[in-house]
Length: 257
Image (cartoon, rainbow, N blue to C red; front, side, top):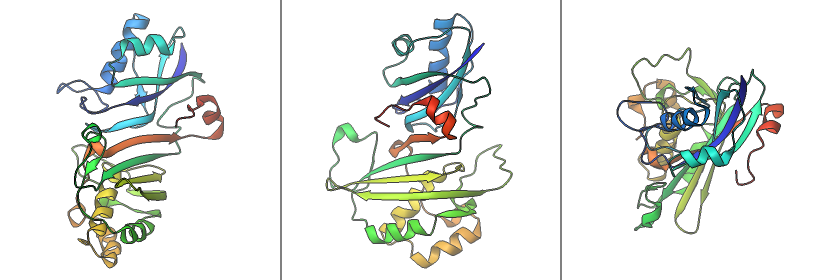
């Protein structure tokens, strides 16, 4: 068998997240079905990030085992229009999209205009309020580095992390002229809904609902109920997964990423 990696993009709006579910269609389920039809045998796919319902991706990395090579054209022909394979690459058999990952970048989009363009409603959180850029930028700086992010981790059944220490490398916030705000969050690994909770905290700082001096006690409390709102899923996109250079060279991300 041969090990193949896909760079995957998708609009998560109509799906019940990445992982297969009896509740409705999922990214994993649609991709496995397309590959099964092409290869004439069941296929198991693994993803670098198990996105929640409504979350999008531009640079999700997936792998699967197959006995023969496929083409992007054939894969995309059998996928729903909301899912597209951008790049297909044979990898060493040892490659694993999750275990080999060094980190990832999430993009979160906010529209602060009084009225949001309707065709962008599924990819950006419409928050028609003034947000203080200085407070958000300063607040982001307090989150950089290695620390326990328990207070920014939502609870979930069977959630069992060995520890909740994570390292954030960078939070970059762009206030654009069209009243859109792009927040890029880069780190080694993320806890459950951590990226969306970071956005919620920054928004609360921007609206003056949390003071700067409250951030350190909030993190020290390690209690989620002391934090801010969880930002809606539809504003979040998995932008890029990072790997050691020898793997990055093989994956050859499209220029658009």
